[in-house]
Image (cartoon, rainbow, N blue to C red):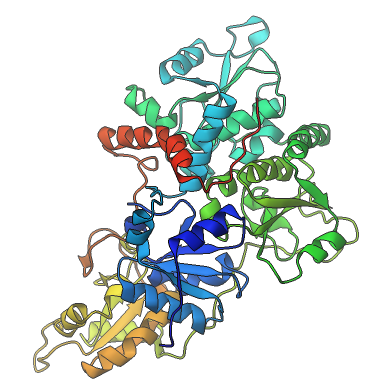
Length: 562
């Protein structure tokens, strides 16, 4: 490999403080990333790099700094990035250890910038919150407790809808973050009704609550302190499988929300730009992210070309995923209902250069003036690098090999996806482990099922992933090493999804794991069955984030004064 330049921690820090573009890539598995990383580092696991990089790093000349646990993995990542067309790639000199020695702060968990920002908002703006037992008491009184049947309180859940259906506060309604200012008046038209905003932990409820306060909602608004975690720790029961959503809003209500959101956006310096001005900003010299912050359903019914679906609440929550280039320009598609303006106000407070387009998509499927015929429909389709030239086999042929004992399937997707659905008899391995000598030796010793007259071992490995994409890249990586061991490497065409479409069964649950399961970090605030001690430790960590920001000093956050 050609000489790889290095970038010192001090240079990275100067770029962050100077608001220059920089992408800091942590190429370790997500589980290791969650154990500690710089504030603005983005998780880019080496084994998933090709599937993510063009979407998340759209400008090929953006300055990129890479680090990992193993210097060899970081160097491999640099080589891959160069092959994929990135021209300004370097290693973090000394890696994460050098960052720490230089006095750099290390943040645990995922989505650390947004979670730390949420804690700063709570401290700076004094965002009100109510403990679980007080909210439960308000809900017990129920409708009709006041004259005219007005409920004392409504609970709105600011998470994604799938998170809400998994577990929710009894009686809560799903209103994902960016939808709150637009829709909450339909749920609480009487100012006497208390509006309680919840999420699983703290961040989205803090941001949601403060959004409603900033937008001038006349009701008393408070966050459910510590979200569903706090509810569980208080010994209260959660609902599961609920499907309640906020009602649709009138044109008049949407205009009211739009006006209220722009009052806030103006205070944060957000600009509304025309198409011509936007084209002048997007001159190729900087990274530009384009997001449509409406619901996924509205997005799929019609959206501006080149804009990715990023519901506003999740965009603010997951800036490190959606926009890993710190210092980039963020463009939001105007929606006519205040969602883009309110989302932009939060991104601006987080230090982003953010604008809203004047082309509005106020009605599902309706195009902005002068754009007839330009709208695209359907889900977001990310650009990905062209697949390498490798051997592939369809489900029917692979099934024949498996019946004859002439192949073993190894799945290289995430362990979470593998355990949820995989080809019967498949094993799982972390893709980056498969080129290591010890795992190649294990693959070489995978016994073929005994058959009369057919002794020996499997000499063909079929690599699988959900849609086959990562399996093809893994096959390209592994072909030289496994060929030396006398093992043929083939990718399952169209992956496990194609296997299922062919009418063949997938199975879930435990299976042979050839690598330690360190690739996925289990969030203490998602799903059920989490140890209460783990949940409490997570809350304690969140409460300390504001102090970490102060020590770090690179965040550039500026919260609106109350």
